[in-house]
Length: 475
Image (cartoon, rainbow, N blue to C red; front, top):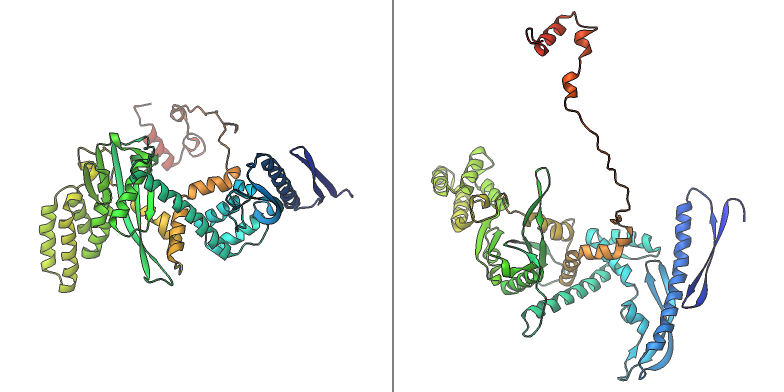
């Protein structure tokens, strides 16, 4: 060992047995942190195998008496610390089925090659990035090659598991005798919005499929100057066969999160489509509809142009003066070319069909004051579906879309499960700067302008400025 080399020897004791995890010669260089990381990861692989051996020995003592030990089998799995090879005992239970207690404890499928932690990391990365980029980052994290097709298989496996869990909870709501604890979030007034977006498919009977998106919340809270966030927000994304299935999914989600027994009013927002208005019907609450302002402004500008008159019309419509605006619009339609007039007539028909939702929420006395327009659905459609499943030439198989939607719905849970150790601690150990500078707002009254009283006091502009600041007869 030279002065530029450090030898590292680590020994671990697991279940009373000592294991030599290996020896590493660390070269002191500019890449010291990377060298240490590689050495610790190789030792972590050895420690992982030693722990599994200790767990297998412990499970031998708790195995049912009717199980027959038929030997050991070798298995290799990819973990967050690298590839781990271990031997575990195999049993045959009373029914003749082969059982591997260690694999069952780890939650590894019979033919699975990746640990739960690796699958969570891969799924979360793929919910944010394309498969190839997610594969490159995951390969760097676990220091083993992972292909983009492997990421796709992870998404399908994790997504299928999440969908099965959601379906089980859905059945508990509607099955007779099944019990599911209702939500506890108070919601005197519950707000709900929904919209749909089409996603392209490949190698399927249809070229595209509609993904329905719903969002529910209890109000808005201020998070900055001119910025508000939805409070107690819950989102739903799903590909459904019909509106009945969509309404049941909405009901299950609302029942799980909100205390609906104390909800007196439901405010529904959307683009005016019939299934959008009916999305929350199964909740059985008194409902009012508010037309989504994004679609209102977009359709108005497409029909009548982006002009000052159009903006004035929209403002009057939202304040309840629809009849006056309709007469002015019809006068414009009479003077327009036939092709352009057809678009204007379609927009007028759109207003008439949704006239119950045109009035602003702030103009309705029974709604929460200061709420403003609803309009939260478009941003959620973009974040939950459009950014990940559309654009850049993407097209999907149907099972892949469903799996990715499930992963995106549970993105926060996957992030916490996969990367929580690397998050900033909230335990209050970080020092807080409690010093606050005291400002004397009277200081500026005593401030002086040297140019007026010293070097430039005799110049014309200085005399004029001095007269403005200190008029004669005042000081």
